[in-house]
Length: 467
Ligand SMILES: Cc1cc2nc3c(=O)[nH]c(=O)nc-3n(C[C@H](O)[C@H](O)[C@H](O)COP(=O)(O)OP(=O)(O)OC[C@H]3O[C@@H](n4cnc5c(N)ncnc54)[C@H](O)[C@@H]3O)c2cc1C
Image (tube, rainbow, N blue to C red):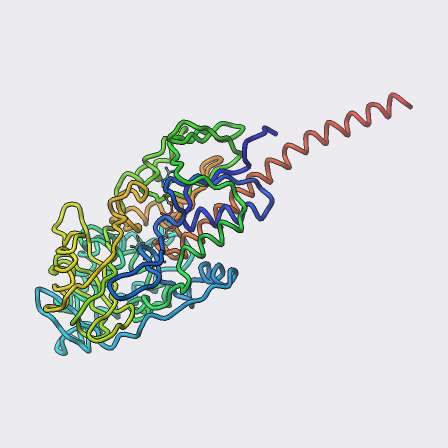
């Protein structure tokens, strides 16, 4: 067998990458992790911060976990003895559409409740068509892989009921309804036990110690050789191995590679031979969300709200709720708005964030805030989580995670269960490790079988000569 620098090279150190490293190292393989940024965690990033009068762990990216369904994340959280914490329970559910504030308690005005019921009934019956864990291209779901706006029109319900379902989809996909497919939001509802209410209320439990603690625990456990600030530019496969070249020109060889970058970043790496037609098209089609997450100390907002505006008519505002109660009239709030490169956006400076807050809570005051716009970064592919446009996922889902020779692919962006979630990243990291291990085991056996056959042939020849 050819001698390589490492058994496996993992490219990218988010949840998918560190999980693949740990699982492969656990089986005795030598692993090199090459990460472009100067930190691990990718689209998760927690740090101890002060925001105005509040101090604690801020999650700039992925944060919430749904323990009942997200078994992959829960296995990691339990393995490393970490704990989950609840966000404060909201006391009202205001909505905002066409500049009109509906203070709740219902998410639509009273006259729209039957339309809301009809809409939700249709959504749930469509989500029931989706089988969990089976790639979406294997389920005859093309009729649901349509623009979300078209799906909403087909519901045939009142504007308020339509806008409420739309808000849920907009927040989940981080993009406007005409640009994204209806299928992933429906799959998400299927994963939440076919419950719209559970999907709506998913934002509750999060890691008390912060996601960085879990990422570090998994990475440390792997014992892998981890190189930060080392972007990969080229990956070349041959019959005997893979050669990986970094931006600074260093090369490393390995028997297998796990590509654990966001899907939108595959196009920035030169693959030789090139990626399959499905993967190549998917990485170039810009299936990325544009959600920006804000942490803010706000004075004078509605107490303990969970506000879902309609981003189409609210300048891109997508969600805001209370993360921690503070003294007096203040709350630490977390919000999301869309920062679409071709549409109007609040912007991430103080005035922009203040406009966002005041769009939702007129008269409220922004005291302080913190933000990290992943949407501007090369290492996310200039988006944040995955947001499939219509027509791709029902065609390519299983192809996107299919190994190509010695290359294995791992990211939440192609997950079979919780697409776009940390749980999906862990799922795909585990799958890539199993696939890579299977290849290495097969090659090891194949290399030993001829050697053994040769040795036993030689032994029998010399035995014959002695006789
Ligand atoms: C604002 C925001 C809020 C979110 N909220 C939630 C939430 O509440 N719950 C939840 O479950 N999920 C949430 N998500 C989604 C979740 O964070 C991601 O889906 C998940 O973390 C992705 O993990 P990954 O390993 O697939 O990719 P990533 O975390 O993106 O890791 C990929 C790594 O590859 C590296 N990389 C890229 N190109 C190269 C290269 N050429 N060479 C070397 N390295 C490279 C990147 O730097 C990165 O570290 C959120 C995401 C964002 C942005």
